[in-house]
Amino acid sequence: MKNTSFLHVAVLFSAFQVAAEPASLQETIDAKKAENSAKSSPEKRADYAAGIEAVAKSRIVETASTVGDVAPDFTLTDSKGSAVTLSDELKKGPVVLTWYRGGWCPYCNIQLAAYQQILPRIEELGAQLIALSPELPDKSLSTVEKNQLRFTVLSDLNLEVAEAYGLVFELTPEVEKHYAGFFSMKEYNGEEASTRELPLAATYVIDPNGKIVWSFLDADYTKRAEPRDIIKALDGIK
Figure 1 (cartoon, helix red, strand yellow):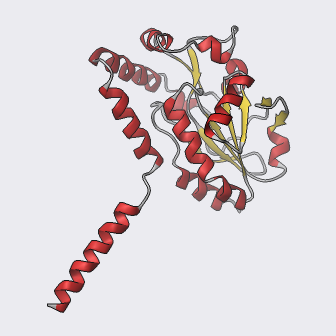
Figure 2 (cartoon, helix red, strand yellow):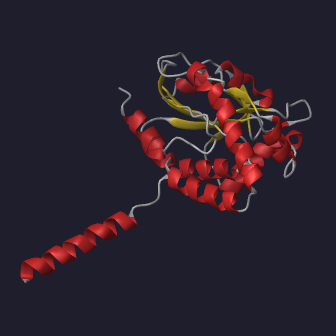
Figure 3 (spheres, rainbow, N blue to C red):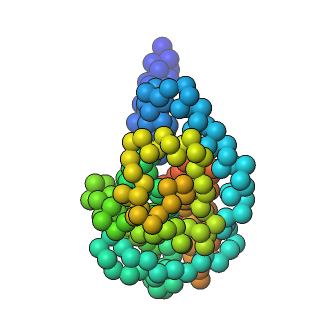
């Protein structure tokens, strides 16, 4: 009887441990995706799915910068107007470089908030986190303030750096039309910016020598690099 009771308690404790574990970034994004999908028409859901398929068929994931490549250097302006050069930052240690589509994107905001939570661990490992988007500096500042970000956020205007990494893709006309229905791309990215082009939500871990040692690339914009995988990659840099 005592053994049975002990086993029952052990099972309950194990179940509590599982329940107590925080949701992964992807689980949080998937919940938001399900919420948004429930509000969308079948036609809209089909258009978004076709848009993801178009990105996959373009093979951009296979041709973009990846593990083993030397990360293209760049200088961009942060949300406060200061110039930041990748090669200079790498002199201080490894860099986690991540792209997000814009402050208008709910999945991007979830991602940025999750990365803010692991920032202390990233810094403990001697690294820093840098996020890039095609947003204008004032829009980047709004994103920083909204998500209470304490890491560097850069404006990659006209996607010049994203292009150097091979991350730029074109929206399908249908998806572009849906986006235009709820926000203005030019308001976020500038009058000269394309309303068709966006970057993949890619994440790279770059060692101090400028070599990409870990990467996350996916044609599906609702898929993002897990915080635990970023930490694991940083922890593996010798």
